[in-house]
Image 1 (cartoon, rainbow, N blue to C red):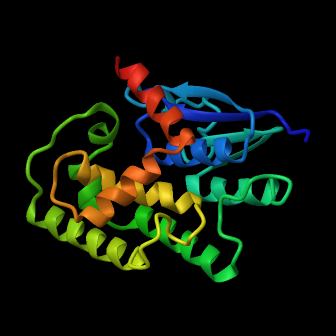
Image 2 (cartoon, helix red, strand yellow; image 1 turned 135 degrees about the horizontal axis):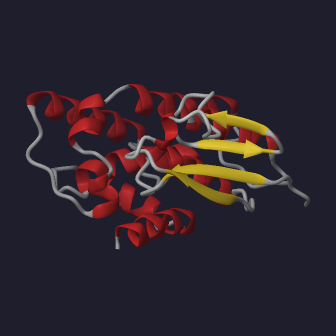
Length: 214
């Protein structure tokens, strides 16, 4: 199968959960891509010469044959459409309603649960940093995440929809913000997140951040 030239832009530390989502999507589809970084701490993404400046000035940015796209869920969906099954591996459920639910979960994880994202930044996940106890708002947000994830996984399967999809990685990462900090999380969700973290594509991304931190 021929494929175009693909470039993925990441933060320099590989701490972005949204870059991770796209990285895993590319890897699961078996696509070859070049990984480039932009220094967010140094403000490189705010300089007009950066490829993603005219988009959202954020990572990830995906470039394919002159077409640049930002926002991870939009990129994931574009990759599924552009490199469609059965020629390429599937990253969204085949069933229409399940696919819609997966996209709902992705959108929810990106738009809600702000206190978790603030109080449990991804240096907890990728660098082993420990944070202080959650605030009242953080505790409320964590409880919402736990209750929703428990309901979604009440079927007892190791993936959200029986078959793995990209939303599994996004949900596992959000849960790991709590789990890897040592916060109290039900064993069902701990086991789910650990199972998702074993995927080769995830471990490849985790190794990038570990290498940079080391």
